Image 1 (tube, one colour):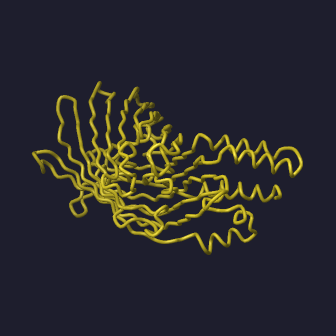
Image 2 (cartoon, helix red, strand yellow; image 1 turned 120 degrees about the horizontal axis):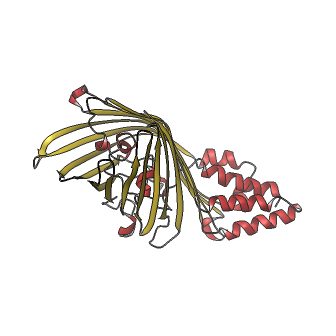
Image 3 (cartoon, rainbow, N blue to C red; image 1 turned 30 degrees about the horizontal axis):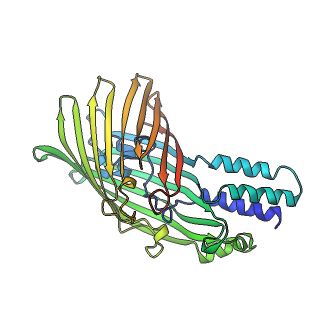
Length: 391
């Protein structure tokens, strides 16, 4: 096989990584517009204080605004996620084709791919070009939000080439769309405590690819047309999220809330392709904040996601319980710095966030996630990088 064919295989793999949102043989729990801070906190984020990005996880996070602040916004919110082996395999493949004859290069490429057999090669890109949240009296609401969203994420897995798995496995969903959020606060509604009810309506254009490629299919000169015509599914989905937050304790420096979200009502994608389908899930969350000082709150969060086990995780609870802490370390007029840590699927997570001049937001998080169907399969370390302008 010629080097150009192998490079075509490599290119297809990397392009797929940049144009897919992996689900299911991998059985990752779908998170709409991932928040770097929640992943630093072990993946917990059903109940959040952040009205802007928090509304994507739970519309009830869209809080009321003070009289002085009627509008919040974020521009070009960008979250880049990579598996820790992504840079390694790219570097190894580049080195493999630097020198030697075509036969030498082919052999080196084969050796590199053999080294990564069974590993998940991960890449992700979520971009929110604009998201705004604003005070609203329309229909007696307290707040509304609007966001343009895109998701380009992926998980490509190499195999030895024997059996039905082929040499390259791809399960993916891409989407681009518009989200509208609205929330309503009810004072002293339940046990004399405040309750916030919210709803997201999401209009999404999605692209689904679920396919295991053999070597012959990868080097076929009509490969792209074959994939486009026979395996790539496109569709439009209108789905909703409903969220409820209950603030059941607020005294002596403590502020404790619980939340329930019914996410993706109706599902996204083709239900007959289980490996690339986003089902409706029920998620529970808890947020406890304690004011250590006037500027340094300590926040603890705990989530139990997919309580109905829509992703069929074989009863493995550790895939669905996430928890962590967030601590604001320093705050001034120009700098706001915080750190996060937690446990996600029984693995340590950590991260940090930095805001400069109240408008430039930077963040990082590192976490591990099992991407196999059963417990103990395919743990993968991932890193998330975040950048946005806020106003």
